[in-house]
Image 1 (cartoon, rainbow, N blue to C red):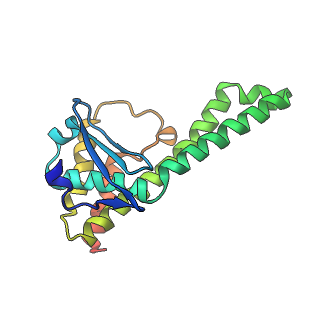
Image 2 (cartoon, rainbow, N blue to C red; image 1 turned 60 degrees about the vertical axis):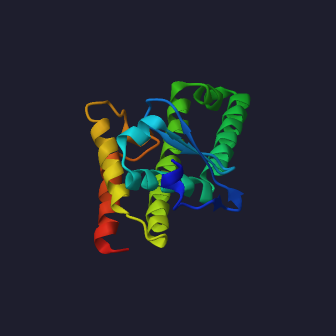
Length: 180
């Protein structure tokens, strides 16, 4: 991981980027607002260095764009709104405690998350461009993730927190082809 992140930023929004590997066969990476960026060894086994930089750039994007902080704020607002609706009683109270209330909250969060994922993808592309690093790895990383999820039920795409990997690969390929 040290070799891969050598070309990546050492700080994000004034916070030291803290890159670490978790030894697990899972294929995942994540970031927190404090600059903590974690990559699972299963992801490292699946991807080459350029692809890893694309994924890490995406996680840096979440930190730089304030997504972790925004996600916490959204969760607090949703919780408060459900609490108020529940306290109001009547139909609003019943809906806030029902599966319909759960689905509505998941829909709002998923759409918010999908837009954040797309923004983090673009951030990674721009970061790789700025640092004169290979951007094709961002495309092929999404292609590998799409292949990995083939045959798995992704559930309702309207409730998914991530856009489909095939769409993300196509969007990054389009940017690569346009040179922007």
